[in-house]
Length: 291
Image 1 (cartoon, rainbow, N blue to C red):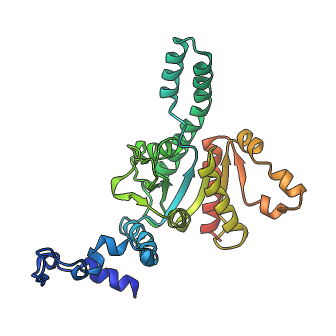
Image 2: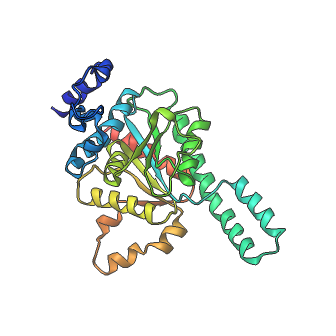
Image 3: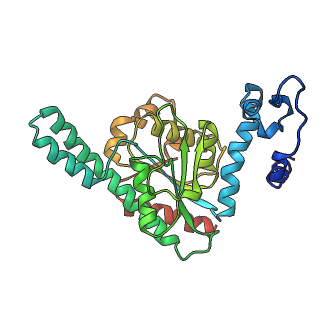
């Protein structure tokens, strides 16, 4: 019923917006109550209509991806703060000329983290290149959060391979603009984190989490929970950078304390090279196709 309603809305004659509408005798401005409900932003943004807005956020990105033949995705998460190796090296050169120890230390850390940027870029290029000559229903499409850092790196790798990629951006108090490598017709903006995370999972055939902060942790543990509880089919969940992940999240301690079990730990794997990550994804996809 909801899809039928949206279909009728989409085919509504645009000239209806300029039709003659009765005007109140006491004013020359039409009363807001006379506006079409779906054409009234104030009405649509009422708290009582949150459910409708949730449906629209779910439907808009879904329909666009269907129309673009996006059937399967490989989702790449990670820090928005990492930069390319080229930019990190330029930052180090600039900091060394300042003789500021704090700036130099920060620039050296940026060099270390730039290796993750370049790895995400290389991994995405492997995925995208493989799918260039595949039929749409078998092709894997890179999907990211659309922002800077690791997200930019993955969209960049796909673009360099000559492929499109999906970007699921989020409206934040401090505007996060889409990175320059997203495919414009597959770049979406969400208000609701929950719907955005649903879209990450809906088409995902694999998820790769690079080192990141709270946002990356939120997305990773959401997916681990969905797989653990059987709410979504088991797919490869790869933690890129074993040194980082084993230091930052002590899963072994969780198992020792009895809060998770061995089966839960088996939901994910550590990887340390783009080639290793891609091999695991290909192996899983191949096995699923021949199951």
